[in-house]
Amino acid sequence: MRRAALLAFLFFASPAAAEQLVSGVSQDLIQITSTYKGSDIVVFGAIEGQAPGEPRARRDIVVVVRGPESDITVRRRDRVAGVWINHDAAKLSGMPAYYFLASSRPLKDIAPQSALSHYSIGLQNLQPDTVHSHHDYEPFRQAALRHLIKDKLYTETGGVEFLSETLFRAHVPVPAGVVRGQYKVEVYLFRDGEVQSAQSTPLFIDQTGLERRLYNFAHNQPFGYGLAAVAMAVIMGWISSLLFRRPT
Amino acid sequence: MEIYLPIAEMSVQWIVILGMGLGVGFLSGLFGVGGGFLLTPLLVFYGIPSGVAVATTLSHITASSISGALTQWKKRAIDFKMAGVMLAGGLAGTGVGVWLFAIMRRAGQMDLVVSLTYVPMLGIIGGIMLRESLRTLRARQTGNAPGRIHPVNHVWIHGLPLKARFRQSRLYISIIPPIVIGFLVGAMSAIMGVGGGFIIIPAMIYLLRMPTNVVIGTSLVQIIGVAIVTTLLQATSNYAVDIVLAAILVVGGVVGAQFGVRAGAKLRGEQIRFLLALLVLAVALKLLWDLVVTPADFYSIGGS
Image 1 (cartoon, each protein chain N blue to C red):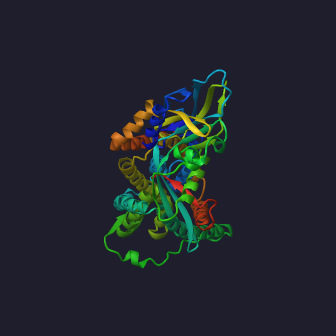
Image 2: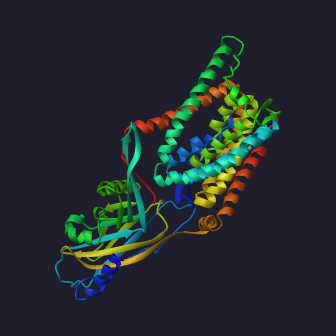
Image 3: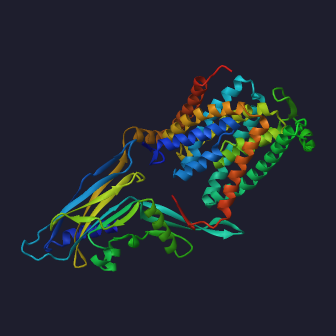
C-alpha cells in the first residue's frame, strides 16, 4: 500500500520533469494449464520527452516484478542431545512470493542505498512487514533469500537492454513454481540517483481449464472430491487386477 | 513431458512420478506393504509439498493395496474376520492420529516426532526380522529342518479375555491385541501418511502368530480401510489431496504391484522377510543419518 501511494505521488507530482516513462508488458494474464512449464514475459518501454539535441544523461531503468505477499516461516536446526532438531523459527510476513529485478547497470551504481531501500529495490532491500521471532531475524531473512534464489523465485539480474537511446526491454522468466495471484510489474526511471518517473502495471497469474475446475472442486466440495479420489484409486486397483489376471 | 498439478501448484515430470509409482508399487505387491513409508519421502525429495505428499500417497496405497488384495483373495489368503477386528481399532486410531497431527504441527516439531518414533521402531522391527529370516535361511541351507519360530513368551496375550476363533488364521486368541495393533497403525497412518504395513505385518507374524500366507492379504484389507478414511479426512480438512498426482502414482502403482505379487510368488516366506528387513533397516538408517549428521544448511523454509 505504502509503495503504491508513493508511486502515485511520484507519477503525478513530477509533471515538471523533463522525461517521462512509458512502459508495457507483453501479457497481463498468465494462464497456468496442464502443460505449463514456466514462461517468459517481456517488459518494454520508452523514455519520452528527451530533447533530441540533449547529451545523453545518466539514465537508468530498473524493472521489478513482485508476486503476492506471503508469509515465510524459516526454521533453524540446532543440535540438542546429539540430534538436529528445528529449534528456532522466524515468521517473515509480507515478503513477496516472487521477486524479479532487472536493471540497466549494477544497482549500487544507479542510486544510493537510501533510495533503493525506500522503494524496496534489490533483494537486500526486501524487508518483511512484520516478524515473529525471538531473535535477530536477519540470518533468517538471509536464509529465506538463499532458498528463494535457489528455487528461481527471487532473481536479480542486469537484464535491461536498451534498443536505442530511448527504447528498452527486459525478459522476465516466470518459473513453473509460481503461486497464483496478482503480481505487480514496476518500471523505474532513475536519473542521477533519483527516481524520475515510475509506472506500475498489474499482472495476473491464474489456473485455467481443467486445473481450475479441479482446484475449485477440491475447495468447494472437499468431501465429494475426496470420494472421487478414493473411487479413482479403487477402480484403478480393480481394473488392474482384471487386466493382469493370468491363469495360474 | 511436464504436467501441472492443480493442488500442489507446480509442474512435474510425469514420467518420473510414474516411475516412482511403479517402483514402490512393485515393492508393495512383493511385501504386502503399502509403500507409503518410501513414497512419501520420495515425493518430498522431488519437491512436492510434504502436506500434499502425505495426503496423496494414500490414494496410491489404496489402489495398489486393492490390486494386491484382489489377487490374494483369489488365493483365499485373507482372514476377513481378523482384518475387520483390526480395522475397527484402525479407524479409532485414525481419528486420534488426525488430532495429534494438528497438535504437533502447531508446535513445529512434526519432523522430529516422525524421526524419533520411526528410527527405533523400524530399527527394532528390521533387526528382529533380519535375524529370524537369516536363521531360517541358514537352517535350510545346512539341510536342517527349517527351524520353527520359537514362540517368545506371550502368555499374557493368551490370558486376555474376549477370545474369538479366527478360522482362516487357525488362531483362537483375544481380540484385544489385534484391536490395539490396528489402533496404533491407524494413528500412525494419519500422522505420517503411511499405510503401516511394515509395522502390521511383523506384528501379525511375531505377536499374533498368524500364518505367513494369510498375513499379506489380511494386512492389505486393513490398510485399504484406513487409507480410504484418511484420504477423506485429508481432503476435507487440509485440501491436500492432488488428484492429478494421485492418478499418475496410481497407474504406476497398480502395474508395479501386479509384477510385485508375481515376483513374490516365486520367493519363499523367509526370503521375502529377509528383503523386507533390509529395506526397513535402510529407511531407519537414512532417518538416523539425517538426525545426527550436521546439515548442509541449518535453515529450512516452510509455508505459513
